[in-house]
Image (cartoon, rainbow, N blue to C red; front, side):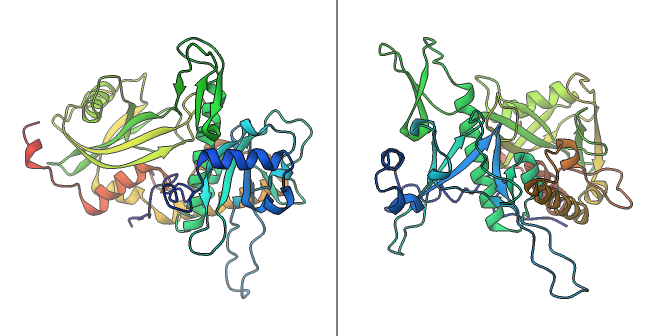
Length: 400
């Protein structure tokens, strides 16, 4: 079956949707208000208007209370549900206001109340402070683990995941963009941490958050009704996915699709048709937020020649084989089991999960292959083709 989401994971951030509305809080106004609060001005009266999400080594603070008991003995117990553990500023003491990063505001439209400002802060270097623990059922949890544990049918869960992804991308960018690339002077946060500026008075270069664009493509053999899937050595066993690669300077998206496909598999591609895009803030810290730009690409040649430096393997797969790889029950089982792991981490039962165990898909009789789960744009590229067919090629592209 095909799984349809309202938006890709890490997209549709509810704190960004308010931007530009009359009740939205501007970064400068939010920064001024936070500075006054931290200085002690009316702290008790306005504490509720500030929500802070602590991060430690790239991991957001999350909470996961036990689910309610099933209504009857015959009903299965629902899996735990995680949420971000927002704290008032008073719970994050001793951190200067310029270290906080503004995420956006929420509320205040039509209800007569002020909008609340939401912030993220890196507490990795804060010694001795406890921001969560077994008594509060909260802990710092790897974002990839939270991604797999999120119920993709739960709008609130997907909204929390998008907020956490945005926050991690900004905080990791702050950690890597410490100095001006033009003169080497220290870069300092401005506009409530949403930008930086060189501290050198003769330079003052403005520095913006980094985004690394990546093309990800499902290559299609239209005549034989097949799709090209690949494996990398870092993949868990049996997992296959789309080809992907970074865009080079001076290159269009479509040109990147053709170049990457040819370099990695030897397949020549003609038409490249846009599908959708997804922010991906769970890559390495040196690339705090990739933007995955998805395409369908039509093959002009069929003989595969794998670049072993890039891929472990690449093969053509029939539509029926791909449909069997899209097993909803296995994705749901992985989500439920990872939600239980998050609950155990927040209770202090487990400390840390490996990416490979979080992304594994298990069943009593495992399928010969599977593709990434609904949290990845690769899943939706593959699923769209398998169940709905590839889009028609515009006539203007017919000669490419």
